[in-house]
Length: 81
Length: 118
Length: 248
Image (cartoon, rainbow over all chains, first blue to last red; front, side, top):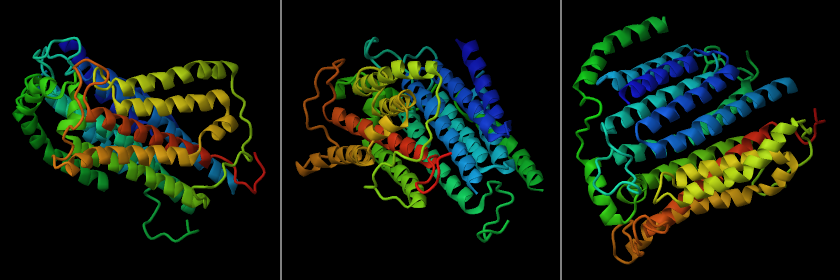
């Protein structure tokens, strides 16, 4: 249990760093979804299934989608003129 | 092990700030802000964790079983959902900025840049 | 230059961070008295099994009302910004023209059609069982909105747009927040405290336990689902070609 927690904490730290260091926004969206998944597992292990469920729905689905759509909007607007 | 969660939270916050400082794209910057935000989740949930504690939902366990802290979980839970809508608000602002200036690099956007100027 | 300054600042803060980290109670041995008190007294006082929901909707209900209003404000702001750019008002007819039909892989359509209703059902289930098992209005609302998105991927834009009317979503969002606020203020009419329970509490581990909390939970679910669906709708609307423009 303790080993699993430590591992997930370190994984969360690493995936957060990946999100920041991925400079291309489109690649970053996928890093963000992965980070959301790691955080979901971490919260489950921390005995917080409620929080994990909301992180799963928000962090791996809703937020990445909003980012992707924003990038698409920017691209559409740029190509228009 | 006993200080690892606090250090992870501090690391996430610091790397998020670093990303915000060096970001060259507003969309990327909002992603870094999300990393900063997640550091608070890690910190709060770790503070409430209890070795051997069960989930604070007394459906399977009898009332009185040692459980982890429910208050911090309630805090984090609402913040995750509300944080996503705030992200959406920021992204809407990004779309607005891009439409006006055709530029998303915070280091090339000057606060008083006139419309149409590069 | 900025980076050097930031690095210097971080170096300066490093000892403080270490001091705080070692001064905090060791991980796994919480010292706060509030959480254990809630866990000990909550089930018998409020007749619900899920203490997180009890904290959200009863013990700290006022905070949740604030969060709820923040959510509504953020969604309203985002929608206003996006609609303002397009010059559209709320009653505008949903424009179905001007969007090229995007080819989707058949497997995408199949999976979305299969999973869309399942996701909707699961979101509803999660929102309804917030008092007994992990879940509740917040998570269930987001899951419901994600299910609506899967419908979009399965059915394509036009049928989806015909289904998703902004006034309905806006009513769900604002109405849900209103239900929550009313659930807080109505007990005051009877001379009781803010958000004091006036309904029968029911029995613990029953789906319909918790009294007033159930109503607040439903209000939050409606508001979150409506708000997220509205955000998805407005952001996706942005990718549509303008009306006076050739699609493409």
